[in-house]
Image (cartoon, rainbow, N blue to C red):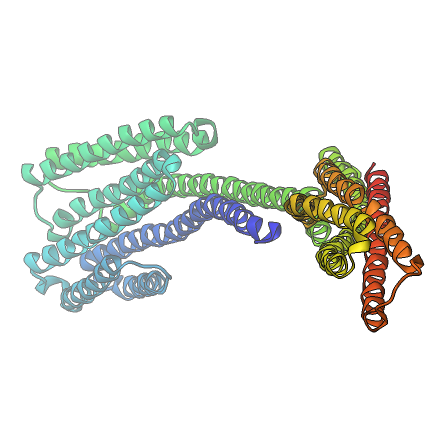
Length: 579
């Protein structure tokens, strides 16, 4: 497997891990930012819910006024009531059209719409009746239905507040302050509704009515304390000081004094000196102060959430930039790794493979910026040079071996020729001995010279018989030493010494045979007293055969010595070549 293929998987894993890490970090920041966006969307739902509570309170005030109005003032009050109802319907439609409303909130709005329709129908029935014919129970029922409408929105407000707090816990104190200011406005309006019942009935005020008003006042006081605590925890005292001071002066100052004065007057006289519309006109400025406080707290809450969202966006951008930088750094590191390590190593590996396959033309250039790779390239360059030198040495050795082999083949061929000459001598001597023995038997006068030739021939035959095995073993030894792949000159020289000793012994044994035989033949040819002419022809043929055999033996002996000299010379040349 190639180096690049081996490292491709680890590089891909590193890139994948880096990408996943960047994605996880970015996903957390994106998730937090999306939660912030959702919380801002919930803030709009909260604003619309608070606005709906407000318009319901305003519609309740106009309904109370219409229920207690004289016939002469009724047309103007009805027109104001219609306008308030239209505002309520518009607020309800806008709230229902907001995106992201939960199923529970949508259900609450649907129930509220049905209850509003029912309440309005009941109130209209009472308002259309003449004042003197209206029953106290009908007016009280209509007022109670109006009072029961705003609390229907409490579960929806709680759900939206919980969603906002979960998405942005840092604004929880501000949300509590906003919610408390809204509830304070709601309960402040409910106090007016508690006065509206006795005022509409025109009856004497009872202790039970006063008790209900005091209960509402107690709830307002608790909400006042909770509001101040929430503002303190949210640390927005400086930003809300003006509206808080206005609340203390107008609502808990003039507004509460008005309520206390009405209660004292009612307990003294048993009746109120004001109508519901007069009470609403006198008390409404203090309610507007609470609305202003609620809106200021809502604005501060939204600003805090937008600031948190801006911080989240900056964090997301920083995370994305850091992640992109990390990914680019990893990619750059991998590219540097590929450029300065992987690719050079792959090239070096490919060149080593080519070098191993016999290509000596490869060149390893040192690379800048990577000392280890350069050192490795230089080391491989040294190896390449050594390989080229080794190839040249091997080529020279192969040439020398070829010359050694050729020279050794010549030596072995000469040895084979030597063996052939020795075989010739071995064949000639017995035949010569036979001819000489026949000649001595036929010619008694030839005894002395022929006998000497026969003795010399027999001596040569005896030597040949004793040297035959030695020569054969020595020649086989030379062939065995010469046929090896590696030439061992010591073994060749040792075998050649054995051959030379055997050849010398053969030569010494047969050197005198030709001359002795020729002398005997000359003596026989020089005798004049030969009377057996018929046999001379036969003797002449014998003499000729003996002469031919002597000449052949002499030639074989000379060839044997010549072959020995050539073999010795060849071994000497081979030894010089090997050196």
